[in-house]
Length: 373
Image (spheres, rainbow, N blue to C red):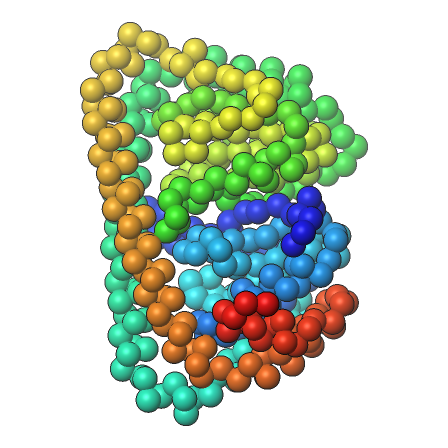
């Protein structure tokens, strides 16, 4: 796209210490959004389809990236028409609950020509198995990272004055969150994720949605976890529309950010995994809520945990990169077996269903096959 001022980027699923965690099934509940589910094998053009659809609208959109390959898309959310197109295959499998009503399914499975794929059955099955093995190993390293950093958070929590922390969070909410005559609503998105390219944090999304930044400097998350919980509750109670961004390592336990586009306001956590550097940001150093002398007693233990977690994280990233390479090889077999004329026809029908301009057949086929446009 030449002009992407209307685009914001998120993840909707990522590998956590507890395994893959996704919020794809929450999308339909966000204001009764119309869901379009794409089904298909690797290399059939699912991500390409979404990139083409996104390129043909000037309305605000959210690009949902794949944490296993951030250059690929898992979804596109059209904000004005309240519709979402998502990859509904593993590991974020979605099945329609009311086919044709709540969800419209577009399948690309029948574009695969089995006669061209079956001679390579052994290689394909071996690559699927290897990919799964590598992803599983990466997940175990991430689980170890989570255990070490959780130990640090618990140590820091022992030194934290939570009563003082909650009072501060309440005052902050009173100053920055005016009451609205409306019901609050919430979208859930990951602003960061662990990927084969390393830890990615979509700073451009923050600056697209906000120009006021309140940043909680908190290496362990012991304080920011509580502050952001209070701010989320207050924002919803005061009638704001918010985007809540869970922590990629502990999505069920803590948030890393709360974005309030209508106020052009962002509350963010800054730590070694995703440091925040925004012009004019207001920094809140969370050590002010902690007993420095008591915290010093844990310093050696916490330093060891941080260093070990960094080493383990790099191992996880390396394994994820190997898994992506394996998946890329798998896609070559499928691309050779795909009927791209059928894919083109399916993409044209999809664009028409969404009321978007027609696609150029030659452009679509070239992009799916990986040829220059």
